[in-house]
Amino acid sequence: MKNNRTLSVIISTITAIMMTIIMINGAG
Image 1 (cartoon, one colour):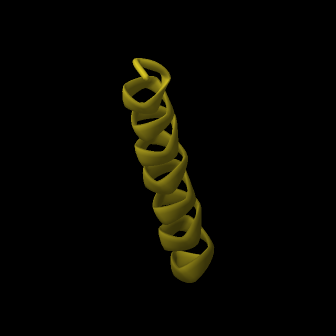
Image 2 (cartoon, rainbow, N blue to C red):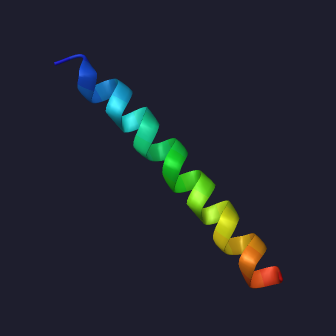
């Protein structure tokens, strides 16, 4: 399935965004 690659990219992006939000909240 080629959808798996897209799904992996989406999950990676969401994870990166969540990490950024946690860092911002931690700094605040």
